[in-house]
Length: 113
Image 1 (spheres, one colour):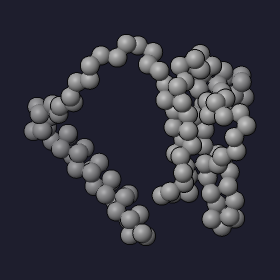
Image 2 (tube, rainbow, N blue to C red):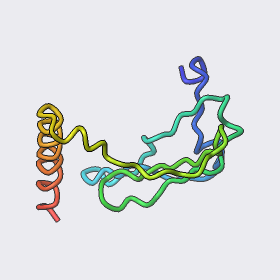
Image 3 (cartoon, rainbow, N blue to C red):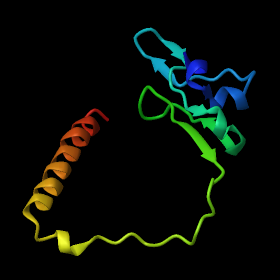
């Protein structure tokens, strides 16, 4: 199916003989490689590197991919908040709800440490 869609496993192409894993199952004490970066064949020439990082915080390892820019990169600009949004009640609600959800999702997880 991946070949039909023109997708390839970027990490495997760069590491054809390396055995590495992206998931550890504590109950079964087994390692698997279930996390992938699938890439269009058209982008393969732009791959600079791909890595599987150590499994540290969760049961999954980060999989990273570095691509060569397809367009010239201009000097980075600083992001600035559009302060005209601050008085907008819908925007205030969005920020409030998003922040609240972030802390609900993340604070409970840190209690297990």
